[in-house]
Image (tube, rainbow, N blue to C red; front, side):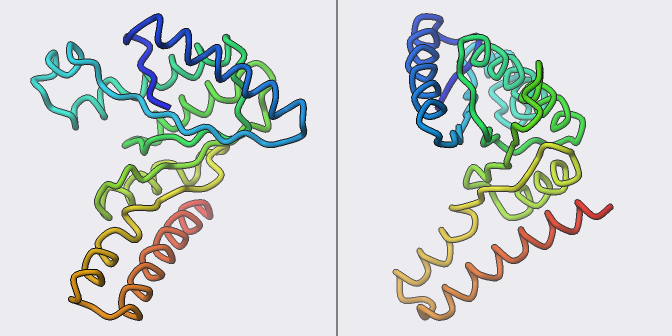
Length: 183
């Protein structure tokens, strides 16, 4: 879900209400709830940073994510797992987990979302999050399979080569995440 706490208040309120109802239903029926949180920049936020999306991701998005998690929790939205856009620093990862686990939510986990970013960025995000208690895994899709799939569809590589490349990338994510957890 896209939610920026400085965005459209009415839209945020409607989304939070719907998500609260979903959260209640899932927990009432014994189902787990994984919630993908995307915090896109508002035009004014991006303009204040000279239009630089990377600065938004580094300087504003982490705190906006924390605020969003708290606002949603205060509205009754209670995921078991928060699927979080990758964060550049371990400290930001700690702050996000602290928000996700506040007020007795000790069993709530977070996973790193790859956002279709490049391999190097995904590796940085995995390293930042891996040894933070509360980050329990990752969900890196497009970065794993997009390029090999496009090359296979264009006839540039074989199906087996595409499968091998996707498997190599996924194995790399696992090795980096698990290796960083051992520290």
